[in-house]
Length: 86
Image (cartoon, rainbow, N blue to C red; front, side, top):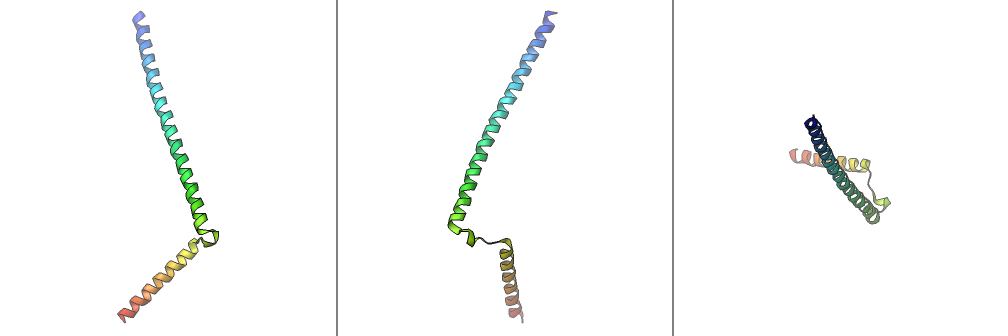
């Protein structure tokens, strides 16, 4: 019966080794993800600061202003295309 206990011990040791390897890979992946998020946050903050410094709050354009500008451009294109066909 000693061989039965020996086989169980080997299987337990292999299982613990595999679980430990999976845990280590997960920890390393989490550390890399945290570093990437920190870099992304730093870049986002510096870009936002750069935009605020260069444009100023008064120079920001709203989505409505962009839509109105695009509508005016499309209307102008339609008028010029109608003039050339007439």
